Image 1 (tube, rainbow, N blue to C red):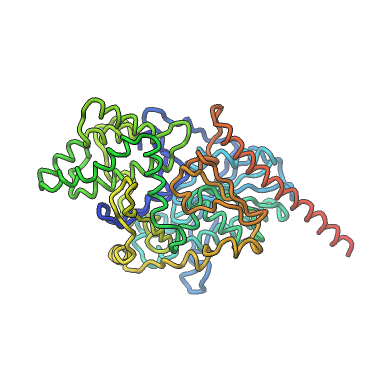
Image 2: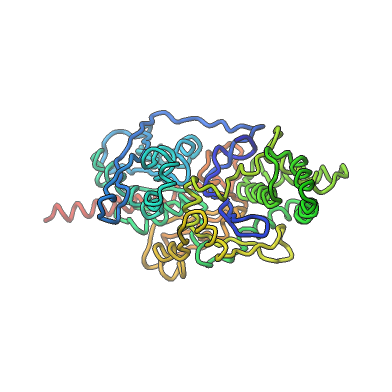
Length: 500
């Protein structure tokens, strides 16, 4: 996938029901894909070893088929580990809705911790992704309703619990504290794991984890409001051009089939458009993607707007201006695949299933005057119909908050939970569903005004702004305190046992 984008797209521009897209919720994911013009120089760390663990397909039932197993992949980075030490921490990165290979290459923050503590670093791959697929075939697994039903967050967390206990036993590290780290959907998993398995994880760093974008805790239009704000603050004229473009696309598309052929030609789509919503859905993805990953080095929103405004100065029409913006983000190509960011009707995609079954995030577009997008409120009834048509089941929209909580989070957690960092960049549209304020002394929020999606987990650069360097230091300092307190508690516990 070429572009100013990242090696993998991850937590999917989900599926928001709209007048211009059939079901479309902006895709999550830790990284942007690599730019065709400025490829990321990723390197695979030394000291890696790959292992597989026999996981039961079903952790929570005792039916005969529950005992079916699959091989779950995990990778250990031993580079900084100094051998068996029952007190050395174990740093764990939670894989999410992709294979873990790109995480290993691009996620730098856990490596810093491993170096700091001479610790083992473990990467866990999520079930049904990468090489951790039941029956070894994602097509076979996803087409089997009895199998794909076991793809959910609770089963994934149970997988992680089993593997981590296995690793502690394998390396004689029973008293080693475990710190779990995740970004985006993986960040959600990290925070939930700390709450569900506090006997395994000492603490969690949850980067850009929109755990409050469920069950209408967050206003539907929170995500798209931030996207609109980012473009408007970057360039008023660019923002206005994009606002006008939707009606212009509709005007051209009305003249069927010639209108769709014209749009296909002007946007250089790889295949002829069948409906105008295919194009509008793609443009929605382009703009939301740029805003979500609007990090301070590349500044993709600025790149799009610079191209749009330059085209306007050349007296190009609205369509040509928007085309220029797309090219600025994605690079010059022979053609552009309107389904590059995902096909909402792709039933083989594991995360499409997760979105339709339990990860129901009601993201919509309000009719506010300052929105850059056409009005498109989330319609659960339509979402439910789509789910039934694709998978034959209904989504359980209340399950995430039932199983993990979310409503009245501060009231519930300030006396119950501990040792969780929620980091969010406020330029990230998903920060609207994140935890932005401290819940207690040890469940803390670290928001950054100029930060983007999962930026704190990315590899540090010499030209990183001071606020980003400070954010990463603050996260490390907090985790230092957790580990130091744990060692004190461990010593006192051992002394008490020795006295008896």
